[in-house]
Each structure stands twice: as C-alpha cells, then as structure tokens.
Image 1 (tube, one colour):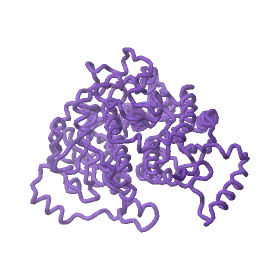
Image 2 (cartoon, rainbow, N blue to C red; image 1 turned 90 degrees about the vertical axis):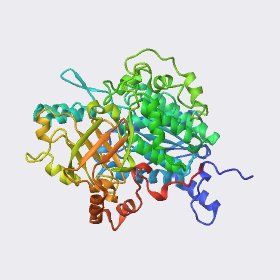
Image 3 (tube, helix red, strand yellow; image 1 turned 45 degrees about the horizontal axis):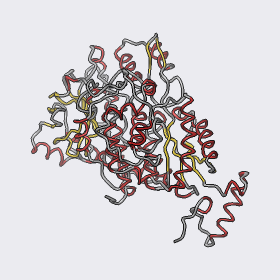
Image 4 (cartoon, rainbow, N blue to C red; image 1 turned 30 degrees about the horizontal axis):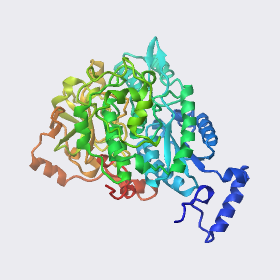
Length: 569
C-alpha cells in the first residue's frame, strides 16, 4: 500500500517528472526563507479572508498570527494564502451572487496547493457557507473558525447593534421621526469595531450551526471579535489543525445527514436567519444529499426559540457569549439532538458537551418551559404560489399577520419598487400584501436581501410598522416582520409568483403552512402564455454567464448545478 503524499509532496505541478516538480517547488518556496527542516513539517494552509472592504474581517491578521502560533506549537508549518472575501454591503449586485465564486476559489486553492489540513477563517454572512462548501468538495482535513461578533454601540443611553437597529432607525427616519442629523449620528455608532453583526443575523447563525455540526472547536461561535478568548481559540484551532492532518479527519466525516439535522435543530432553537436554510441546503448538496425542508418544519414544531436575541428578542451576541454560548443552548435541547455525531475534536458532540462548563440560569438562553416563541423560528410554506416551498421567520413576525388574507400590490422588479414604493399616489392600504417579483436567484440577480420590502412611506408616516410582504428574495437575518421569502420557483424562472397581478387576493396561513394565490387556473394559464423571462438572465460571457446557466433555486441552496456532489447516501 502506497502512503498518501504529505506536505510539499502533495499535489505536485505536472511537468512529467515528479522529482523535478518537487525540486522546483522547494527551490521557489525557499525564496520565502523556509529551511528544509520547516518544509519537512505537516503543512497547514490558512485562508486569509482579510480585505480592506470587509470590516467583519478587520481582525483576521491578528487571528492568523494566533493560528500560526498554534500550528507551530504542534509541530506544523503554517502557510496563509489569499482567498475571495465578501462583505454584504460591498458586493454588487449582491453577496449571494458571489458566494459560489468564493466556494469555487476555496475548493480549487485547497486542492491546488500543498496542505495536509486547512484552517478556514469565516465571518461575514456568505464567507462561512462558501468555505464549508469548498471544503466539503475538496475534502481535505479542515477546521473552521470565525472572526466573531462585534460589541454593541450606544446612542442616547440605548444599546445599538447592526443591523437590526440599522433597519429600525432607518424605518423611523423614513417615517420622519428621526431627522437627517440624528440618523447620521446613529450610523457612526452602529458598528463600533471589527466583527460580524452582533444580533442573530446570518453571520451569527452560520457560526452557531457550524459549531453544532462539529466543524469548529466547542465554545467558539459566540466569542466577540475583540475578546482575548477569540485569539486563544484561534491558537487552539491552529494546534488542532495539525492533529486532524495526522488523523486524516475529513469534512465529509463530520458534516453528515445526522449533523445537518443537529444544525437545523439549532437553527430553530436560536431563532436563526432564514438565510441559514439556503446555506445549509448548499452545503448538503456538496455532501451528496438534499436538505429536507419538511424535516426543518418537523424540527421547528418540536423546538421552541430559546435565545432572546434581536431580532426575535432583546439581547446581543456578546450577551449570549456571557451566558455560555452554544453550549447553553445545546444543554436545553440535549434530549433532541444526536449526541453521537463526530466533531472536529475527534470526539462526539455529546462528549464535547460533557467537558464544557456547567450552565446557569440567565435571561439570554431561556429554559424549554419559558421560550421566546413556541413552534420554531422558521416555518415552511407551500401552496399554489410556492409549489417548491417558501419560508417565513415566524418568530420575528407580528403575530396578528400570521393568518391574513389581502389584496396584492405588485412590484415587478427592484427598480419598480424603488421608483413607486414612496409615491403619494400608490394604491396601497395597511391590510394589503406587498409582492415583489424578479428578486430571486436569477431575477435580481443574486437573490438580494430585498425581501424586507419597506413599508410605503405614507403608511409608515401613519404609524404602520408591519405588513405581509412576499417575494422570491432573501432577507437579512437581522431583519424582522411578516415576510414570506424564497418563493420557489422564482418569478424569473416562470414560477407562479410571476403571474400575480395588482388586486389579486392572497391567503397566508402560517399555522397551516399555506400560501395561496386565489386566482382561477384559467386566468393563470392565460397569464402564463404571455410570460417571458427577463432579458438580463441571458448573459453572454464571464462569471455572469456561468451563474445564469447553472444557478439552482432556493431549495437547492442556489448553488451551481455542476458543483453538487453525486448522491452518497
């Protein structure tokens, strides 16, 4: 039996002579100042996701130094390498449009360069799923760490956090209760330091579910970015990376159907972002199975929302850290999770849980007997408007709107919405249902976080704070409201959402998991016969062509079809 190549001998460039390839590789790497002794060690790659455009990753250089320290303590050679870095506010047209590009970058660079294991440094929303998708496909031993959440800011004695409070104050500004001067003052205080949004947004959600899946060391997801524990955790991550290289512990051994179920359970218990559903579906596809949306619904029925964080509750991620982090949540649902799942420690989830500090009563992680919301944070919807499904974050919606029938007010695109939403002559009432079309994976493109449709200005000024809003778009995990998302098939793919017209009646019943367009089939067929795909969905070149040719719908995680693994289960 031939041993697998290790260190510098892994993945040699093809020159037709392996000996020459290794000789050339060592000659060039020695220009970096490495000795032969260093080059004989296990090589641990480190994804450098720092970017001057990405404040969530401002602390990555410090983390890399701590990771390198841990790698060297354990006898390895750390080598960092650059990789695509995506920030939500600095990604045109959307971060989701670029997530698969980052995943491809991660997969190919892990595969192309010699490394016995890799440390993945995630943080901002799309970075964690992109790294896990790429790692699952490359299947080289990998361990994840994250930059961690920001600490909170303050305005007139009130704690502030991005970006739930961004949206709350911007809504007040639109309504005229916060003036232009004050909104600028608030903007200076919403993000007071490095790290990810400090509410239960997508970044926090993905950190927590990744720890639940076993891809991070225990206790790591909630550590604030500026806390010394974040660097100590980074050092431990580097040390563990050397061990998983020796153990050949691969992502596909950790991320399994069972661990994915644990992740979905945690997603419901923490009141996590709806984006987590899309990202977990994409990761599942890289592992060779489909995410079971019906299972998500079943788990939600069994799993109440326990974490009192914005937008579903009142607190912030640093409060969750002080309350014990994910461990405190897992202890409350211990009887519901699969504790036999293997984790990155080489031990089971249950064994890890047994080594963590004891939990204590607190106001952030509620006991099962006193949850924030019963019935799960996220609910699956189906019906003639969403044959392949849609979701709503019921824990962050106005309860009175979870069963609602209303008249459709339709916006055919993001541009149409932007031009008319605040028009004084917009025919809209508080009990209407706002409908946004062509904002899905292909429609926008990139499925932007536009599902948080603004309350029309004249209604906001009258005091309306929530309405039923439906679309094929996504919504930031930091947002809130009675908002139906991820309608599939999307409008740009000819889904029923494309057939909705002003004045149509729509019936939403979250308890029954139904969303229905109350229009007869004959009328719908007449509308369908004249439908045409938006012109922009036919790109001629570059990444855009690849994207439009290959992107899948929300239930498949919006991954590219050719990147999904063949079924393994």
